[in-house]
Image (tube, rainbow, N blue to C red):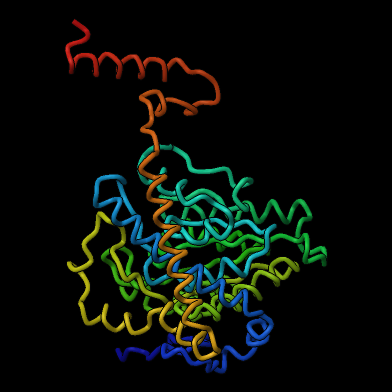
Length: 377
């Protein structure tokens, strides 16, 4: 039997080259007007966000290595995908993250100490989305948030809160997940319901090339962007290290979702420069040559080069660096001041009302801990 040749390729939307030149690919031309409409302050804000994200990443990793966090989830290398997509959303939109979208939460108004508190084990359950720009809880169970997001998008649709023709009030849902999560059944089920109900929703996959130690090439023989196409929704692959492409494509996709045109799918091709989490050692499964290659595609470096070419001053970059350093220092200081949870915390809110099983378990734990120090004698 002769194997059939298959052309599993898709074009990539890119506006900024790795060298920092604004040279839109043919696929990017339809989105160029969205970037041309941005003012200087907004373009500079993209850079502030990305630098802030990286400084927070360093601070979080250091805190974990110093024993102040149980875990840290790096985002180094994925700043452009996250910042561009987050800035493309409107205040009324609802964003469902996985567990790596730190800067997305910050952009929506989340205090980053809430993230550190969760990863420190000082809280059981994150934050109230209504108080944080409709930024929902981190989800450590892979792809679960795709179902949560789709259900919420269905609710928006049933409530008539999208497709009315008023862009100031129509809402949409943006859900983030990674290449590894696309292999989960939940992700496929979410795509089924989104396509069937034509939900006002955008699926945003950050393909950072590795699902912990499993490369994306082993998970999927074809580009992940084709997943959305297979479920009957518009799908686009973007250069995930190009913040302008991330912004423009997500902006248009969200506008179409709010207008009642149904869901869409974005694959942002990027790279996880650090470990999957601080519990991981990426040197065990990937080569330094690969890391060096992606270093040349750094999203912050290319964007800074472009801003410099537009006339951004050295004083601006110095100011951003200083602000990001102060931001990270403040987050670190407040993280170190977080109180440790009491023993009672793990038994609270398991049930809506007091429950005898929780009382029994608490009593057992109390007896056990007393037995360790002899206080039950």
